[in-house]
Length: 364
Image 1 (cartoon, rainbow, N blue to C red):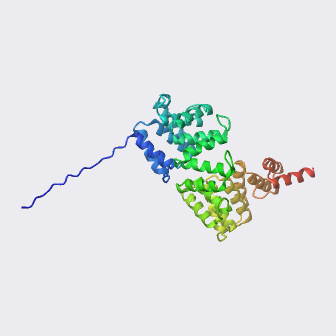
Image 2 (cartoon, rainbow, N blue to C red):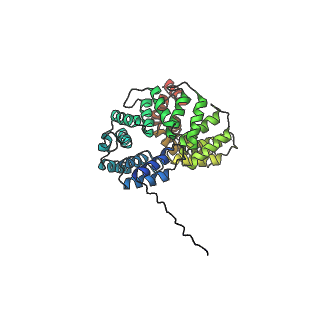
Image 3 (cartoon, rainbow, N blue to C red):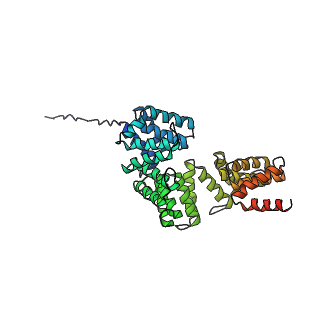
């Protein structure tokens, strides 16, 4: 006889609660040893909010406030902060058990979202959360000690908190720690360690770290000079929308640094970054337009880009705008306005502006 055995198949359904969605969302934002994925982060954080997680609403507020993975939108940031307030984020934090809520309340005070800006209060709540092992709060506390906001500046203390968060794979903290090593702030200067920490963050998809690593490779600082590898990191950051990376690619193409010189392509990359508000890219695009390099000469357009860079406080842009006004190139001649921009640039020690001003006043 033949027996037929029935096979019982158990379907295991994993039901994620609000905390699970929050944890998954924060991993996608900060790394913690895995690749950053801001689109996935938003999906998870939205789901956590729907399930009643106030801290997730603050994370979404932060993303919109900074323009991280989304277009910067202060109105939406404010709306998400209000959702967190309505969900009693302050009461949850004051209970003393929820480190996510403590961090979130600190951030609302830090950024002034639906609460008055109060850096001192932000430090108090960041510290409470950090001491309970909240990794992002540890990074935020490091930032406060580094900048001296809400607390006396203490770069060594900043390094200690960055190290705690960085050791858990927090990409932002890894980049911050690398900066401290690169500059010798709060720790003995060590460019090799800076490269090591930039690499850890860059491999997780942190665009600032990718750009910083690219610059180190271009200069041969803390590592062997390798402009091809630098370009690869800039390209990876640019693929994630980094205007700084787009600018750096433009610089490499314009100068033929490690790659064939191509001014037409340089203009394309400068334009990408300039349209996103990158001041140095705006200035460099203005230079290309004013001289007709890689693009048809257009002094009116050049002046437009110089003005945008100047208004952002870029000294080179201020000097170039002053020159266009002084010479009446691309704009009506206006010597008084030109001098005003030269003075702004001179305060920032822009040598060309200082020389021009010296000659102007010499003959008055």
